[in-house]
Length: 214
Image 1 (cartoon, helix red, strand yellow):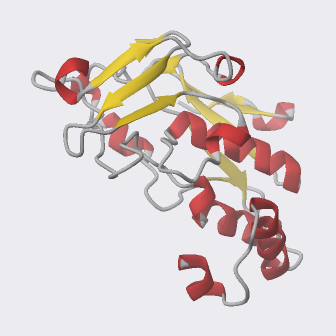
Image 2: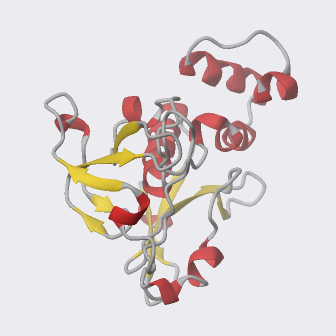
């Protein structure tokens, strides 16, 4: 509904329809197309939350916010989940597990897991899409749309973001969609033990775009 208000036209019925609409709106400009893609709800940051009522699980693990205190626990992935589950950092380093949330607000149970698979990340039912999932999805969409993109990887932070080329001068610029957490946000959270500012690497499909950008 938000996109319909902004762009008009008929409601798209699939994610592919959405991309087709955005390509039409952007004309021949890949830079404009990418600005539409990262502003679209399909690539927004979505915190892990109750899939019934939307109660958000706190991201921090400070005293009073342990897994047990916020209502989550690690559980083995089901047979259908296992091919899509990956490990990663979520409230601490995790192996390839699923999470069960017993919502303290509504009492319902929700399952969630980290994944690199677009068909999982695009789940519209309040499915958590953290920065890692965002960037996995954006990388897949950039390849599909032939948009130049590179990943920015702090070697000792719990964060990742991406940059695309500006058409006017070819410079790499950070992709900032609604709700994205910029690098400065994480630099200000080092007291939470998420890492340190020591080395940041840009990784691109071409050698010229791959470099130390610390």
